[in-house]
Image (cartoon, rainbow, N blue to C red):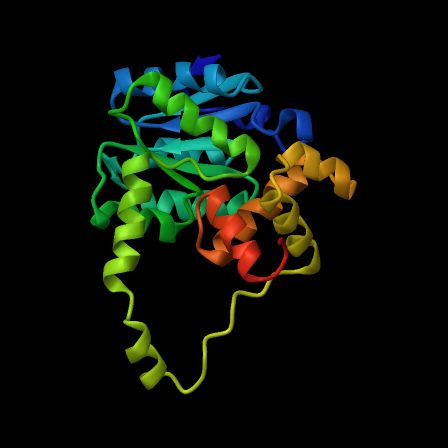
Length: 244
């Protein structure tokens, strides 16, 4: 179901989000009617668990919705008539940490990509791509991986290559080596299994956890390690001696 009107307080949703309903309710924040409806139609095609999609055309309208409802997934355009998506993303992440927030925009430059990720977005897709490409990127979140357009992932890698301090200079300037990101015992267990090729559902069974919990661990691991793909996770696991 797709709707644009604000949700009255009497319909407020305050119950816990179960595994089966994780992405059942989604939000699309986009000021243009056509792309808003296009994204709303794509969501249940990419993620069959989506049953209800609310739409908002401004930051204010989105805030009215999230004041009364909890969403498992939110697609947020960066450029909105009453502000950019950064503050809205921060509010969504603060009010509902379980919500997966993905920026859906036409902007693929550093001035938009990095502020969005710093605000707390878990992914960044370009709505100028074909529908099948966008759906494939959205499906990645079911495995706990970030939804990133290929050009965005490439831009991130280029950014860190360009801004990285040469190794010799870093060793000369730094009083001590930078310690690797610290993971909890459970995060180490999840990283080891992900690196061995297990999917989130299989990891959940092996560790006697819910798939929702595992995807949360994967998201935290990616954030702590500054990575965005299973290949990078495997490399990091090998560096830590977790896999042969």
